[in-house]
Length: 440
Image (tube, rainbow, N blue to C red; front, side):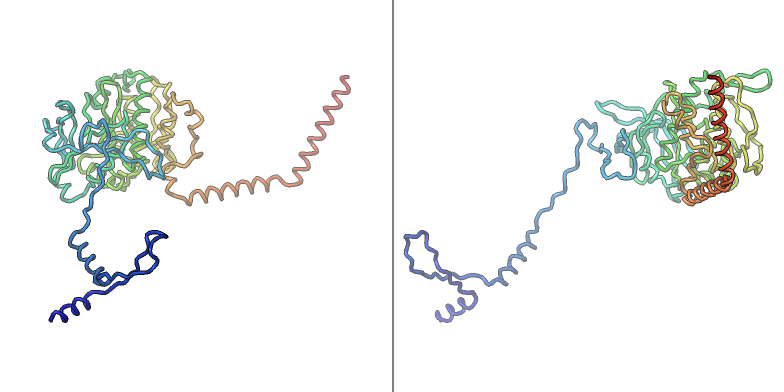
């Protein structure tokens, strides 16, 4: 029985014979063998695999980057690595995530069909509170998703800090509601400030009492803000002096934008809310519900005109007359501000939106502090507008026209004409030489 048990144990394991290696040269050279019982390779692999499944390795998530000096553990720096196709901004807004307990809604400012706005407060550092503006969309918009509110908030958080824009403090999430928290400042709507500085002239017209330097500065502030807005894929349907805020520091700030994809829907909501005219919307938006960056250019010119005259450029009951060749405005520049006269403003009211000036052209035409503004202001037709950038075939057409014009000029200058020109030049040079010799 003992012999059978021994035989069974030897068959279950493999006998591995390995010679002992000598420890040194002086050791015994005779090779001795020792027998060691080992587990077969297949059985050993199965055993190790089973052990790995029973005790899997512990995974550890990477640590969240922490910025020293940050006021909140929810504050995350904006990452600018990997941006290849756009200029890096020098200053990027850092958003903060607030808990609902940190935010208090104090006063309701607006309860509309699209947005609800409040004046509120948030918990700041050192046990202090900070006054803010809080906005969100209504439950109807949240349910139907007529406006892409979440995408819009994400885009607003990406905007850089600018004196021309209402800067963002952060966001707050309460259930299904996403709140946008923006800075609070003492301000008045620009239209109220204009009406309080309105004066009547003897000829029945009106004007404002602003000085030219203030108007120029305000216009540049608005145009800088709109350039930033457009560079981030945002538009401003319904832009007017009511949608611009004047702070105590004499700075104009813009707010209430929308995604370019939501512009058409916002135009429809604006028409449903009020009777719109050319003072509120460009012709393409008024007639076809189309809205692009050139439509914002139209509205900017209306704002500039109200800063000068305290009145709207178009009658409220005016009808759009199809006149694609020129401007739809036929008034004259106010004499009080003759030093600010700018023909680009009249070009903004062309019915053909593709030939309106760009925001950049307008800003350079008003910005005296920019040393390069004189060489950067381009004449009409020398640079394609914003709408032209989306029509690559125009470049080919313009190149063909340029080649055709060169061909026409070459055909006009025939060899016969060229020979006559050379003969006249030689004859004139000979006459000059004769006059010199006679005088000597």
